[in-house]
Image: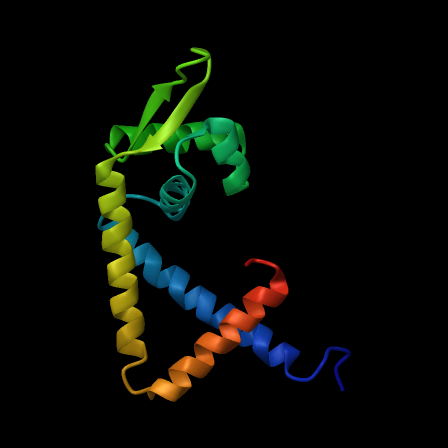
Length: 145
């Protein structure tokens, strides 16, 4: 008998397998936009948070400042973000999402949702509600809401 509560090992394994599948599928989608998963994560953070300094962005991405700088450089060259000097303190540079970045986010999310819709096409509405309820419960207990 395990030292964990009932079904914990099975739940953890299922979550890991689902996350891995989503991650692999996401990488395929991102290749068509020539961006990496961390770059996409940066676009999502900027979309949710608004403009941020490199330090703030690196903190939210859990990446080193230098790594985030390189990431922003590539996103800026692709036209997805822009650097903007702060109006009050010219030494501060903020990163802001451009329309092309918003378009990439929307395209990728639409493709992800279409994939999930195809996966769930034979799942009845009540089961879909139960999946959503279970995920909401898990997120709530993780403190992410």
